[in-house]
Image 1 (cartoon, rainbow, N blue to C red):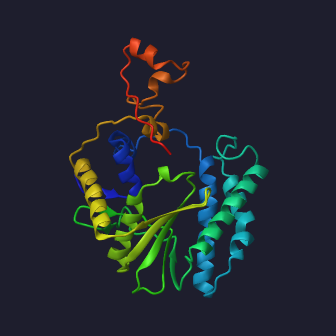
Image 2: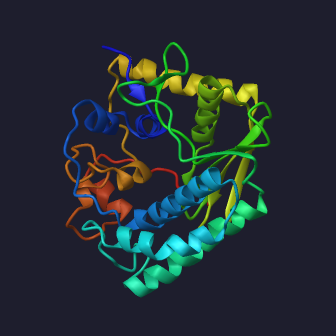
Length: 288
């Protein structure tokens, strides 16, 4: 078996459930019909930021009004996707409500970029390292693809900051290993150092910063390489859990799904389930 080309997303998928990784990346099983409704805010924010930094790099000046000027066109593009089904549980019950919310979130992102002085003389945005056909070799075991949203520094020889922005509501849903992988890729491919790396959660206006150190980068490499080792050994045993199965694109067809016994049935108590000898695991729910 050849070394797999990995991204943070594929590594994260394996860490949550190796069987999900197997279905998605090895056999390419068809997934449940996707509903990209919840992805609209992130798509809009990413596209607007991409246009903003493109203008900055071409014109050599910063114009924050690019966000406002391009908002309507970008919003209409993503809200009209055939995969978008508006409902209150996602983020809005109507297009006017969605517009107001996403416009507010976009303004949050702009404020965060300003507050943390992200736009510096050297600013690289929306870039990617490698591809499946031509990955970046981080180590002898890690063939990597992916990239952060922003790297900003005073110069290419000065350590800078790395930022990845998220539409997550809480920092519980992010993993520092993602930005450390991006820091490793920046050093390997461009020769630049990262001193601080962080996530901008633009819905909640929360900035989560992590100091980049050799120890944390080494821990991240060890984590990623251990996953690659297991993939090479073809260890794809399922590890169902409430959190992993709830977000899994295969939960409706997977024989190991934690929720299989509950589908299309009324909710039963733990005592009832135990009396029926149903084999299940009640996972610990982390405090937010």
